[in-house]
Length: 145
Image (tube, helix red, strand yellow):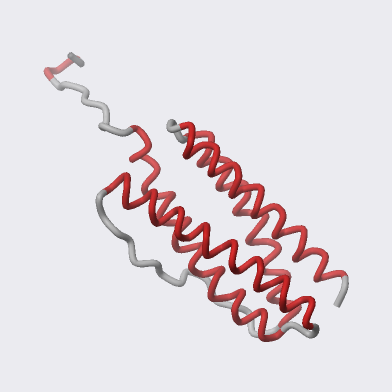
């Protein structure tokens, strides 16, 4: 018993504390999917277009993973929301994508550090590595236009 007569009942699953971050991840992945589709259309070469679409496929897998985890933890669904404005110019799109991917790495590593379930923790780290790889590809595309 905690003083003043209040009882502390931990959540049935401590990872439910991550739900706000999972919503942010779902919305971020959804936004990236939409922006990368537009960015691929702006790509100056077939190679660049192919690489961007491959990254987009990874983001679709990430979206599905985060959606499944959110539903598993909460018993609810979250309808993704576009939270970013997609640049209309290729160079600006590459810059925004690079920056977004780098920030996402940090976010997912932080999420992994707070996760209790070992499978979830490992998957979040794996997804963070994917995001880092994406950032490297966007950096490559920025320097080889």
